[in-house]
Image (cartoon, rainbow, N blue to C red; front, side, top):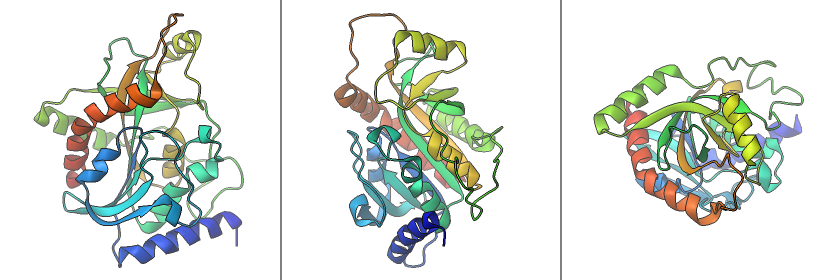
Amino acid sequence: MDKRMKIINEAEAFLRGKLGGITPEVGIVLGSGLGKFGDKIEPIEVIPYKDIPNFVTSTAMGHKGNFIFGKVSGKYVCAMQGRFHYYEGYPMDVVTLPIRVMARLGIKTLFVSNAAGGINTGFQVGDLMIIEDHINTMPNPLIGPNHEQFGERFPDMSCAYDQEIIAKAEEIARKLKIRVRRGVYLANTGPSYETPAEIRFYRTIGADAVGMSTVPEVLVARHCGLKVFGMSIITNEANSIISQVKINHGEDVVRIADEAADKMSKIFTRLVGEL
């Protein structure tokens, strides 16, 4: 057996043993400061990553490190309270392992969320941005022998984020009177923040927000044939002018994400119910 499949199978078997025959419909990845949505889930099982075979520890601030099975709006879901990052030193197959495991558990749709720096000058701190497309500057997790069990060698990415789900999310936001933006998310490796010159470049090539996650998970989800919906919380204005002002990821980003997470949670909760 392919060693990669052995790793996936071990994690899947462990988690399936906790499900009691339940098949989750939606997988959710909660990024920096967004783990509180996990509190909105009616829990069936809450499992620390350290207990799951072949999972690693999330070291980023604001990531609780739990895998949750439960119900949202009457539907079974599995959620990650915190993700694994490439900048933590984990290889891409480890970063994206939970996505393949969730696909094997039966999910059909993946929700991804993150805290991001705003590049679009029309955005404000605290805004919610629906991800309509992305730009990837990270190593592609699909490099290497193809996982034939999951998908084809060259997956199409012309519509990575499901347009029907985006339309539903925008309608829900209108009904809830929550302002949402649409935009392009650019992913880089981190962990250093971007230079002003890089921000100007990213703006020029069409990015509206920038972060250090999410895209690897989306690439693997699409390879698995999953529908994807993504949302960023704009937690800071990415600086395009040289200055001495410093960004404090540890406190400022998590605090602002926490403040906006209630709005995101309301949209996610309604959206899961309408899938």
